[in-house]
Length: 107
Image 1 (cartoon, rainbow, N blue to C red):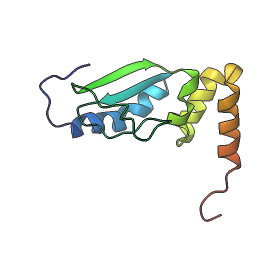
Image 2: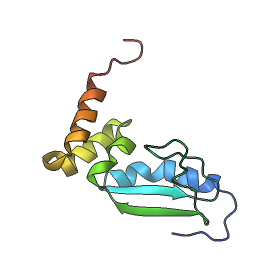
Image 3: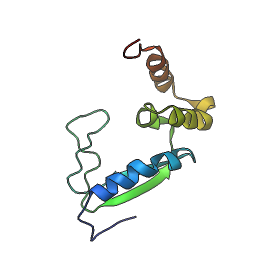
């Protein structure tokens, strides 16, 4: 959904933050894009992956390489595994194992 007349981009951020779980639990991803979005790329911190000429929310099917975007929330990881447990790419399996083996803060 594109919002060509929107100028308060905080609305896009709030909607994405508030509704992402609903989408992930259905096997979907919800992304926020707008002019000047400072979210960096996954592999290149200098790349502004979500900077777009118009504010929008994008919905797409979850794919196997989405794990890094889901790793910080238990319910999101479970939704990911429900969808991809039989076909998780080896690099993602390694990332999951490393994340699970990492000591928790204060432990």
